Image (cartoon, rainbow over all chains, first blue to last red; front, side, top):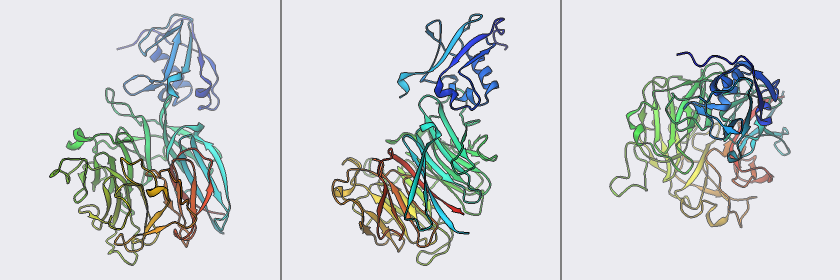
Length: 96
Length: 367
């Protein structure tokens, strides 16, 4: 079944420095088209292969110590993303 | 052309490489590599010089790192290193081994993966977790981990693995079907009368002796294991085990390492006991060596701390090299690395400021 359609306006994504350092050539800021967190991770993985495995486990869910925030809310994989949203992908303090 | 030795370390804070001079007297430390991830095991492929590091990061999950330039640059992958949706996700890679036709990775929760493209992608060797005993596998102190992988040196279909706590298993068909191989090994933590089960033993480390040699009948499948409950030898690929703990200071320890050429020479670092703090017996450091396949043991102490040695040595933190005489190396839970270049007779500390050391392996390098 197809997921929600991609948003008309891109999502502005801000990535944690520790994540960027794992993928040479990646950048802390990128715009992607995605309607959900799951699609956002797919988009990141398409741009930098392997990044999806760093953010999403095989449950599947967002990794336990990764926080994905939008409008101050921590989101799960299925959460919808508003058009033009700013999303922060951060390492949680609980991870270390 | 001369051979030098590189010591490969997995630590709580990344991988490290120690480069030795030709005489193994001077060592330089490089690292930390792998973005300071906890790295459980670092191995080198003697045929290619490629270095692999397996671990897991609390934030980013499991991965196998790879360097084809002796540590100068690294890549990482966990493509395919996953169980099916709904199962407990993989937390970390615990062990690596180079087989005759592929690369193996053991993971937590216990399972085995294979890569036929040099660690770029991985495939689950699902037959192991389909074994009917799996429902009875339980975590040990380090988790439910597949920590030992022993490929047969010439037959790619044969492989031994060990899981804490499930025991040793063997496949003769490349991983499609498996059989437990624990007969003769004890499980002291079970009730009286139930201490020799088919599976459920807490193997701590499993290794294969080199082929040939002088004291132990060969057959090519002589195995040794340090167990939570004793030290054992098998001369038939694990079908039957016999205790060789007489002469050791305790039945408890983690690592075992074999001599590169002599199947009767084995090294151990016993600890004082499982519920006694898990440090050096009497806080005095000793590596125990046998020259007769475990019938007798001698404590090697020269150059090792003989007071206040309240550290442990973990299951993958003892290794030999391929030089002659063989070098022996062990890393401690408090970050010291000790080396012997004369098969354990004399020891020296070659660095004492590293993070807790999880694994020690060696790689011969021709220069």
